[in-house]
Structures are given as structure tokens and as C-alpha cells.
Amino acid sequence: MENHKFDTALDELLSNLNLSELRSHNPIAEIKKALRINLIFSAVFTLAFVVIIVLAKPIIVRILLTLIVFWCFWSLRKSYLLFKYLNDSIDPNASLLQELERQFNAINDWMNEQQKMALFYYPISIAAGFIYGGNEGSGKDPSEFMFQPSVMVILLISMAVLVPACFYLTRWMFNFSFGKHLVRLQANIKALKTED
Image (cartoon, rainbow, N blue to C red; front, side):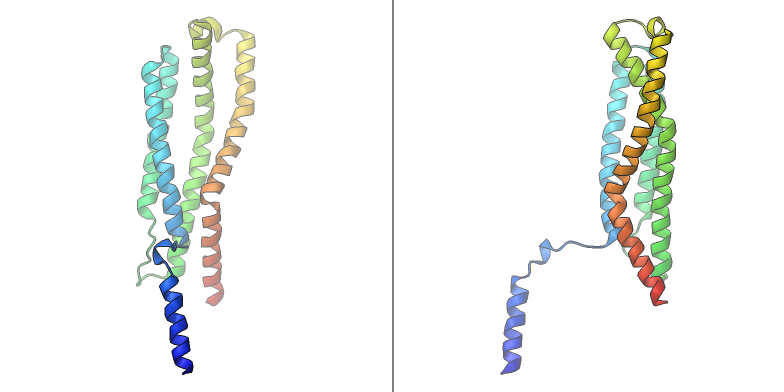
């Protein structure tokens, strides 16, 4: 009689369980999902820069934006390679600890590389935007307004403020997109190390 009550309760519990609503808590799968979103946004921004290159009149803006597009393609390629490299299913013949550490290190290396390259990218972006905005706002050729001392000072102040701000925003965005999953992955690694 006791087993019958248990079986009925178990059947009731299982019938109410909707497996399609359960989400994976695999941090690698979550990181791949965030990386896929990152790839999509990066591709959209790259296409937007290409459109601006076509619309921009000053040749210097076109040159600077072309450098940015090359950086965007490099970044997209690195991100795609990481996406393909990450494996959310572990080879049963491999050491789980080594595999998780390898993937954790690959993600951190990618994030650090992206942030370092952004320090090169941001000043170019700011200069391109500044020159493009000055050209559109004044209707003058960049050679007519860029070499005025006050304009140069404003450009340097803009760079001094915006480069660090963009760098910290990038760090925040990486942490927002990948941070909690990396923490969970690191906790899994730590738990495996304590078991050894």
C-alpha cells in the first residue's frame, strides 16, 4: 500500500513536469549562446560601418572607417573561431577537468585580446566620428577645420575621456554577457580540483 502511494505521487510529479521549459545550466552552452549573439551584433555593426564608408565624403573618414572594418572582420573571425572551438559536450575519453580548463582559458584569452585590440580601435573610431561630424556639421572639408588649435584640443579631450569610458564599458559588457557563466565554469573547475 505504501509503495502505491509513492508511485502515485511520483507519477503526479512527473506528469506536471514540463521538460521543454527546463533550461541547461551548462556554462559552456550559455557562453556559446552569448557568443552567438555577440557575433550577430558584430556583423550588424560591421555592415553599418561599410554603409557609412559609402556615404562619407571625406577621404580621411573613409580610410579610418576602413581600418575599423578590417578590425571588425578580424574580431568576427576570432569570435567565430572561438565559437567553433568551444565544445559544450565533453569527449568521454578526455579529462573533464583539463577540458573545462582549456575552454575557460580560451574564453578568457579571447576576451583579453578583444579588450586590448579595442584600445587601438577606439581612438580611430573617435577620430573618424569627430571628423565626420565636423564635416557634416560645418559643411567644410576636414583640412579647413581640423588643424585649428581649439578643434585639436577638443579632439584630444574627447579621446582622453571616451577611450577609457569605452574600455570600461567593453569590460562591463563582457562581464554582463559572459561573467556569470565564467564564474559558474570556474566553480565547476574548482569543484573538480577538490575532488582529485
